[in-house]
Image (cartoon, rainbow, N blue to C red; front, top):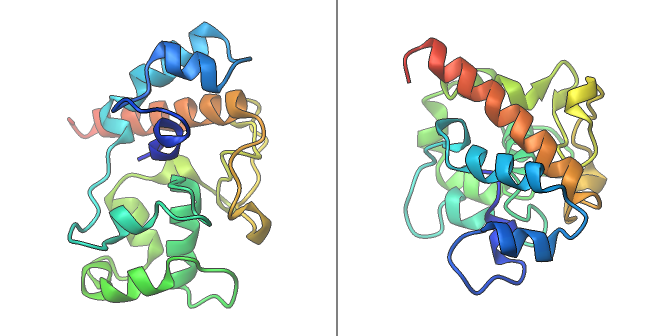
Amino acid sequence: MITGWLQNLNNTGLSPNRDYLKRVVPCTEDDTITNFIKARYSPGNMIFWVRHPNSINQRRVNPAVKDRIDLTLESLRRWYGNDAGYVNLKDRFGEDKEYFKIFKDFKCFVKHFLLEPFISCDGVIDLANSDVSRKRVEPVRDESFGKFPENYELYLKNAISVIHSRNELLHKIGI
């Protein structure tokens, strides 16, 4: 859910590993990389999108969303709310509207998949421009789309934090 773009930056291998991440994100602490790899392979990093050729799961790997879950969720929030702002995946959500109708609205979608750690009172948390550990969160804005994080280590730490929070929610219900 969180890192498809990271493994595709320059990696010819199948998944990010410690050496690869150290090369791509050179100033990142070893502990951050270790924790990130562990978090990536935990239930908190999993979500089940509708799957078919050209589905959301495949189309969110595009120049604007960059496979970032925070940008994908913000696009979905805007789609559900018929917001006039930037919605890069609008066509993809529309093609799968029967699937998304199951959840009635964005709030129900978030609740069903226990995605609350990705949400603040102001909207979807921008994992590239927030500091979740210090409770300083910024919502995704139009200018967030189309960008890789400027501070990869902060992005990784934020990702680890929300994945751990989601793991705790999943654990509470027995997953």
